Image (tube, rainbow, N blue to C red; front, side, top):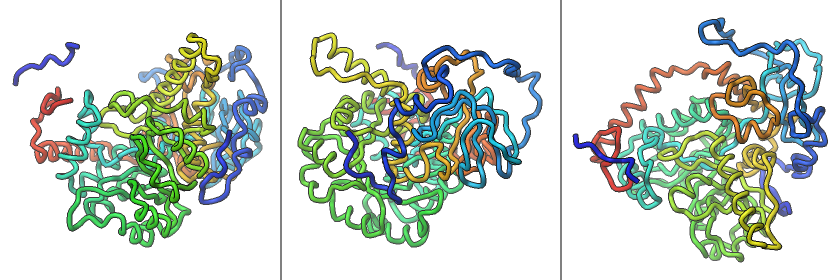
Length: 503
């Protein structure tokens, strides 16, 4: 095989949710969070004292076998708590009581007989919430690292999608979902445009259900043909797979600009999510726009379109790394903020970007500040304020939950909400010593810091390892799927790419 030189060169008027949720109650902003803190040091006001007797990180050679994850009620003791709820506040050291599927209490010195977990070397916070990811593409991770949007349309939604079998959709969703959990992402909206047939759709849902991830299954179209039942099959999905909203998997419609499809979604009570990359796309939809719609990307909206989104209570999902890399346009973080919209974050595709939210947060944080500071240097009297690390954590948690129509259920450590909680290690070499909790999460950490992940009170990752997952089986199935898709698409099998333009 020939060698290839690949290294040469104001709040919106309404929030849509399954249950009404007050934005003022859920999140009153970074100032309220800071004011509610029990201690200020780890949240940026003063250096924190080193706790006496804090256990040192053990080395692999000396570490004892990890105890099994808790099977009942549990109290996380002594964590640094980022709650994302202005009424609950933040704490340098506090406890989180999980009873069944719910958060029962948050605060210092909770009295309980629940099984205690030492979280004194952890930051405890809500799990990250992704508002748009194409999870069926799990067997195609990293396959298009140099690709533009046109390459993706030709190779992934073109060649690969045409040859996908239901079993490929199943393992794709499963491996992406497990990767999300491993990275501390506890909720993902699966924008599933692999609806080639009902069998493809059911297989993708099966992968999500098996993983234990909280998922919004956004039913989408696929390759045209006699077996494609989009969008009408959403009625069957509502009756057979999503008859209750009181479950880990909820239903949405991955839509285009056909408002007749939107009407089918609303008939079954499913939120609507769509890509918007061009100018003027929303104008014909003005009469159908509403608070149940999330607009993805949106880098080229006109001022009239931004006003429509605001006036109808719509939501904005930004996938900043992909938008910059693939050529969608400049991610519209500043436009959203200028119009009073708090955006959520999304991964989009793992064909060329990682599935963790540390990358997402860092990209949005640095992009907005670069743009705002450039305008200051140019003497712009209307240069925007700089966003903070607290803002970015909000986008990655509670705002994502709101945009996924789950704001009353997850996204913050609020008693009564589902216990979607992650523990991030403070004693790892990449962040020790932690001097600012939000700063460590946004700018210092990566997936190696994700120690434990609870979803609806179940430990899905425990002390660094996924629980109840046969990784050997997952690896075998995803490799088999990859080999089949590459072969069926007519691509040479090579780990160094180069088989199509853009790879």
